[in-house]
Image 1 (cartoon, rainbow, N blue to C red):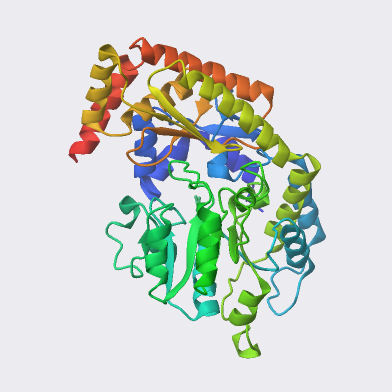
Image 2: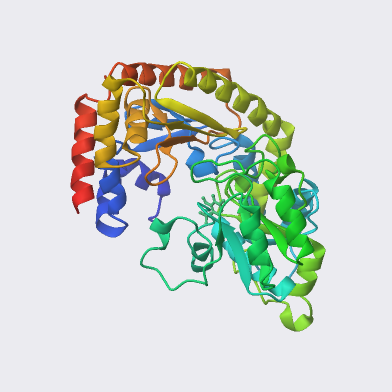
Length: 460
Ligand SMILES: Cc1ncc(COP(=O)(O)O)c(C=O)c1O
């Protein structure tokens, strides 16, 4: 047999960017080169990554949230080795295998009010199922969504995406049903039309990290139910401990009818997603033998995803990572809030648990205003990029700008971070803020290159 993955990995690390240039979305390597972050990572463990030169990076992105328990967790690795060794009779399709049932039982036990579960392979797929289930359960066509919402990029999920930049050029989508995030009157007006199946809402919005206004979700639940419509909570990013509770909706004291989950569920090893619901919803969707496969997916509930999910849930609970997310989140946010009092460019710190953002705003002092205004002229959100860049280049920390044209930086670290990682981040951020307030960092060679590149991109 001539195939050996180990040899491929050892022989070709330098080739990766060229392969992406040639065969995949070439804008990705182009963007990374523009930012100067075109690093080849070779190993990951816990909250850390190493590049091909052996340099260590602190990962405050966690693969957009999939590495909740940290990278390459030994318990999940062992479960996957054991699964392969078991040579399971997987995906027979005409059978009722054990692992999907076991993981459903354990996940539902953590999700107050949820009774049944549909397995799928991504967050977007979980949302697609939620849209269809809500329509079928109520017999109504329209699912409302909120401004700035992000529920994925498949056609149905894109129809309920509140960010225009994703939708442009892909229409026509489902009829538009947006309501402003937090606006109960707008929700009431839509509900009075009598054709609303439900409201799909993130319990904390991923784009920009916006917590719902106090009481909004509880009031929304009440009026949705008064009108016979469903509350659908998208917990793809906020679920599984990220916010310091197992599910974000627990902070709001609401009982949703449908909940979507994905990302962190398999410890970052295998694509997985789930749509949880009250039993009544399932009775409507799968109402007869004729409808047995009315919504399904070939890989749903596959052994690898389920084994990884069972191991991940065990790690989450055994290591109290949900409690750790609450404690470390408070430590991180307290440290950042303290700095908001010291640095005039830092205007807001927000989030829940380890879903955290900080925002920059126009400074008061004239000296800083000139640089701020210059960056703004080039592109909104460029200042935040000027913070993400030195965090990466000078301090080897991965962070991200929270959305297009936003002066917001988002942190989504693994839930297992400790004192060392929080300290590393806060010290680095303080150094970056010191530089920014002294005018350094904003005028250095890197900043000049970024502005130049942004201008070029802007003009194209
Ligand atoms: C709240 C939310 N819903 C849905 C999705 C889509 O998930 P996926 O990228 O796995 O399709 C995401 C992805 O970031 C998300 O944050």
